[in-house]
Structures are given as structure tokens and as C-alpha cells.
Image (tube, rainbow, N blue to C red; front, side):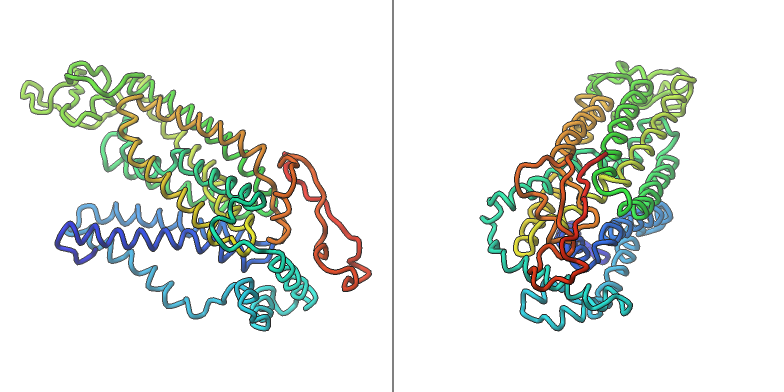
Length: 451
């Protein structure tokens, strides 16, 4: 794309990059989830999300810095190739997943990988316990085809993974990232450049709160973070809709003439119109009567100014609550809840749900703001999140601190996700004759939602 001279070449390059990003978004969480010790799995999978949000922040900064540079967009594409090149060079040093190695029959190599992951100070009995657990799980698996996803033990976690990915996108978050400059310009910030600067602040909020999620996810658990995230995002979207009533008004942006717009925010969204701050009217952009026409909306009244800052505050609050939970937990849960034999196929469907939903939201956002108003659009997203909150409360179990092989047991039977249940301790899948006296009969409570 850096050296493209024709539009078709640029589109072709974008398709290739899109396919690569889509594949990586599915493979990386699964790989980390299979390789990481259960005590650190949440933090390590979320670390992948931190890398993404950090990259987004760097991309915003580069876009801002290269805005006025000749062929700055080419430099942006060229710089984007550097991280991928570094990762490509590091791949030969990455170990294969121990579960994949066991499936291939290379148990000794799997043992070496586990020993390397757990460290030299961890007793070999722990490593052997993990090996036994993986082998026992694989012996009981027959799933290897897409049709096997329809089996009850696979279908329930598939629904959970797909709905969480759907909610991640239908929350409208990526519209806040893709169109943050447009939203803030609609909200009354004076120019595209100032709106872009505040967009950088929003991206920084996303990255900082992802760091917070890394610090607390294995302590508080997945369900608590999801509940907090859903509720906080709903509040943020409701407030954002209220802010836009002050700024734009609860009107459809489909006026036939510019004179029908009574607020600058609504006028600025129409390409054929411009706002006159001196006369406080909206008119056609080629109208020579007014010499102060602009497509920027400075906050003039106290009411407009309050709405502008309420919009910024609610948008930052919304992004912060997204980053704490819904931005990373779906990827983590997706990497945990499927059996080894079906994990890649189920993960591919859940990831496809994410990207298809992303596409739908991205292409409909601006159209919806034109037809059901900006406030109506944000409230629609809040309503979708409310449905997701109910689904999450009743269907998504807590997976904190469990082996991947034990997580699948949470979907057996009809016990509701929010109820307490007992899971066998780390020797649950071993034969009684192979258990040590210390481990025999031990058990632990797994709280699946005492929120």
C-alpha cells in the first residue's frame, strides 16, 4: 500500500492486511490461553489487548503528526509494516502450544515447553499434573468438525463466545474510535484538529484502562469486570445521548434546506451547509451574504458549552468502562471455554462474528445519526447493551483460576452461571491410584458469579 499508484492496488493491499489481522485476532488469544499458566492467563490474554490499544494510540499520534506532511499517508503505511516485521523475526523463538504437541504425540517436547513456561522452581509434579489433565481431556474428545459444534457441550459455549463478541461490537465502541473526531466535532469542538487531539485523549484512556484490567482481571474475575463494564457503558451512552440533545437537538439530520437547522451541531453535519456564528443561522456554504461561514462549532452559550463537555466526559467514561471489561474479556473467555479439538473452529466462528458485527456497526453509524438522531443512535447502543447484560448475567460463568480442561465442565448440565457450584481440585481428572495422600479428596469452591 505504501508504493501503490492505483486505487485498486491500495484496496488489494488492504484486503490482504485485513485477512492477516483477522487471522491474528483469532489465533493469538487461543495461543496465549493454551500456553499461559491458569493463574496468569487472564492477565496475559489481556496483555494482547493492551498491545492493540497501545498500537491504536500510536497510530492516532502518527496520523496527527503526519497530517500536513506530503504523502504522509504513505509514511503511515510504511511505519505500520515495522511492528509486523519485528514479530515475523521473533516467531522462530516462540514455542508451540503444549496441547498441540500432545495431540501430535510429542509428549517430551510438550513437557519441555511446560517446564519452560512454569519455570525451574516449579516442581515437576505440577508439570506432570498439567500433562495428565491435557491427555485425559483429549482422550475424551471426539470433536473435530464444524458440525460437532452443534453438540450441547460445544453449542452452549459457542453461543456465549459469539454473543460476547457481538456485544463487543454492537456496543458501538469502534464507532467511538473510528469516528471520535467526527463525534467531537458534532459535539461542538472548534475544529477538526482540536477534535483529533481529543480523540488522542480517548485512545489514551482506552490504553490506560486496559492496563488497569491487566492488574485486576485475575483477582476480581471475568464476570465482575463484565458486569461493571456493561453497566458503566450503558450509563455512559445514556449521558452521551443527553449531551447531544443540548448540542444538536433531538432532530433528524435530514432537512431539505439549511435554514431549517437551528443548532450549529446539526448544521455542521450537512455537507451543503455552513454556520454563521455572527448571525446565528445556518445557510448554504456558497452563500456570499455571510462572511463568517464555518463548519466548526464553537461553544457559544452556556447550555452548548455544558453539552460539549458532558459529551467529552461521557465518551471518556464510556471508553474507560469498555476497556476494563468488554474490550478484553470476550477474547479471554473465547480462549478458555472450548475443548482442544474444537477450539480453533469455534474460535474462528466467534472471531468472524466480531468482524462482521464490526463491519455492520461501522457502515451504519453515520446513517443512523442522520435518521434516528445522534442521541437515538447512542440510546440504541445502550438498549443493545442492556440485553447483553441480561444474557451475560444468566449465561456467562466465572472461569478465573481454572484449568482449561476444567472450564469446559462449567457448561455441563443446567446450573445457572450466577450460582455457586463445586469443582474438583487439580487432581480431579487423575486416577485415584495415582493421587498423593495430600491431594486425595481435596476440592475447592469455584464461585461462578457471587457478584
